[in-house]
Image 1 (cartoon, rainbow, N blue to C red):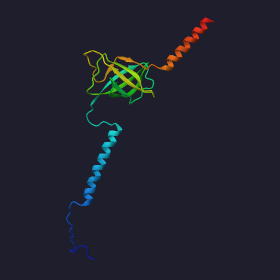
Image 2: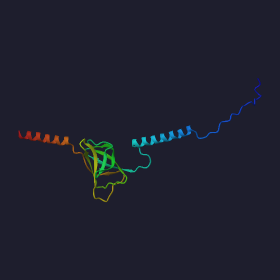
Image 3: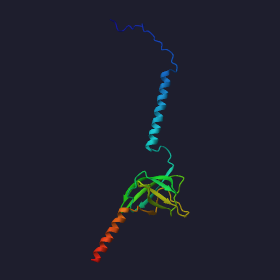
Image 4: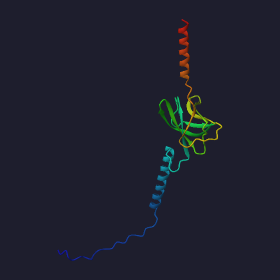
Length: 169
């Protein structure tokens, strides 16, 4: 066999002309469905993409017993944000409040941890002040009221009754 000779017996295969078929439309629909599911997953997961419409304010409390991340922040009973983090800044608890951008806190506003409903869910209540000075993004709210813990009150009453009883003997 002589390999130097080339054979010109090749057959040219013509491909059929392509048009938009059912498979193409199914593929486009599947991509759109996957994008919609991804968008919903990101939205339900709480992940923010793009420009944030919220600003951060910090508040220091002596006691935040029962307050959890995700608890609402309210002004006059209207939700304006949520608690995004709770950390220890010894000896106080530093609470990070993520508020809607349209709501600005004044430097004399008071943040208080309160109980909502019979179950006792905790939330942060903001009571408005009268100052004209607003807290900047990343600023700290200075006036706070901590949780009034019923167990602490009962313990103090029992302790004072015991000490009074011991003094009377």
